[in-house]
Amino acid sequence: MPIYTYLCKECGEKFDLLVGVISKESELKCRKCNSKKIEKILSEFSVGNHSNKSGSFGGSCPTGTCNL
Image (cartoon, rainbow, N blue to C red; front, side, top):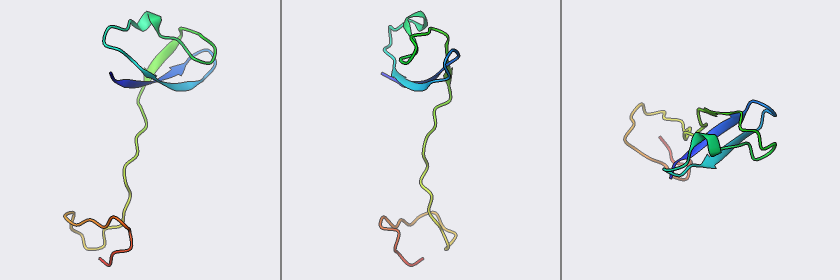
């Protein structure tokens, strides 16, 4: 089941919902104010940030202390 991020148009709450395949959009509501005036928004995600001084993308340094 996918997880979607929603924004409540009533109270401004941003929240994630685990949505089942057979769930109807009309059944979804804000968990803070129970409003059904919510919209699906783009989820935020994290991408690792590391310095790559050698210019190549093949190596890895799990500890972050490797000499490049």
